[in-house]
Length: 368
Image (tube, rainbow, N blue to C red; front, side, top):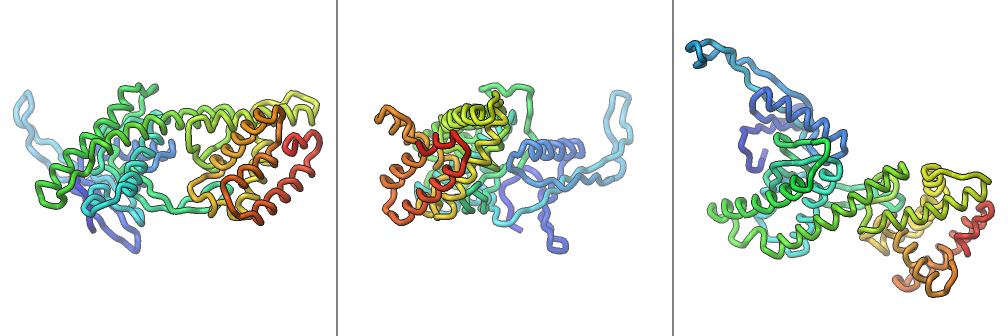
């Protein structure tokens, strides 16, 4: 089977319909990398699936020591990982031309991988296109549906480190090493006649650095939001599109915290309020979005991004009108501005009004 660039001998095998990569290295290195893959999986970093380590006895060799030549057992180590479908080695991607938009999709996939690693305390140390796999996968967008996305996977964990606290220097070193590695890959492919045009331009480099800084800030905000509310953003809300999304959702949860405290006659904690907000407000509202096909109208949005933009619209409307206009009026105005599907708007608004009217007082804060 085809493979990318590698410093090691890697054999690709198929057995009873299952496909595996077998990487030959030292036993210590294979064991360490296997442990790194397990830790990456625990931290939910997109990476290869480890199967196991094999030690092969290669007999006895003569080794020079301080007391002379001595016999010593020789052992080869092999790391076995499972191959995935719809995966392309990163080093093969640029053997054909891409538009600027598609190049940016590849850069976005690499940046997404960095942003999954760094806020979770993972330093790669050897970030390069040769050590990535590009995966075309269908992901579930919470509350809205499924869509196909381009993702990068870490495919070489030899140099991975998980220090107690990840310094900024290691974060930026990963990004800069990736940019340098692209220039090396470009030189190799141009020398072999595979490509003629640059693989990475100065514009690409600026795009990657800027995108990384923006997405890293979003990643930190998402992690802070999760620690405070105990809500799993990726599974329940959908990834945040931009910085400030977590703060806007938290503001909405704080308002809901006041609402349920009034309803229950006690001081509700933020975790309790977040759980109630998710089950009684966010999920039903996004369920209505899904029922009426808003994913098709806004194909680039997640549940959280669409909900946040409506809430942001609500705050701006409320400031202009000097009163809280409520979520329903804000959504109606938002959809009226950005869509032309009037029948759908009316159906969505009627469904939301039914939802909020059925809530116990003071649920009319959402109707205002």
